[in-house]
Length: 129
Image (cartoon, rainbow, N blue to C red; front, side):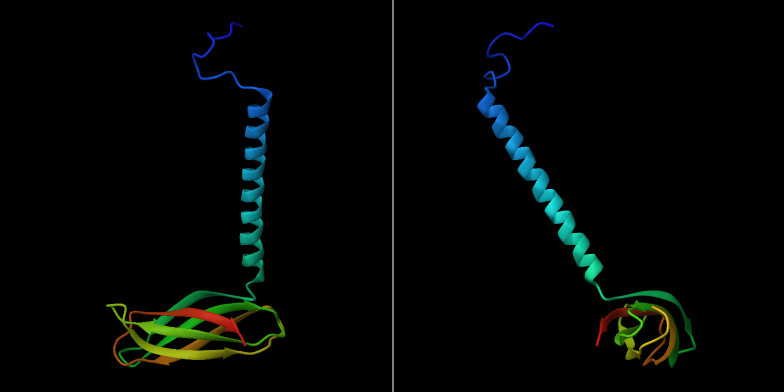
């Protein structure tokens, strides 16, 4: 294999510049690893998760919202459930208590009174009490 002419692709790297590049790459790798670890730990620390299962509009006065809440079986939580209109305005809202249970996931259905016709019902947020 032939070597290119001297200076054609920049100065010839010395052992010092090669070591500097390796150190910079190692620091970049460590920083990326630390960021991944931080994000992963933050996700694992979330003590409560929820997911919407469904909703049923009962007319212009109420909507039924069904959702699952996953948390430690002995913990209590509160979930904010909302009904939204076609223009995404909040037309009904309730803070729903989720008490301790025998399993980590509990399914709940709540009937929200609405001030006008809702087109959806959803869980906005949950937190441990």
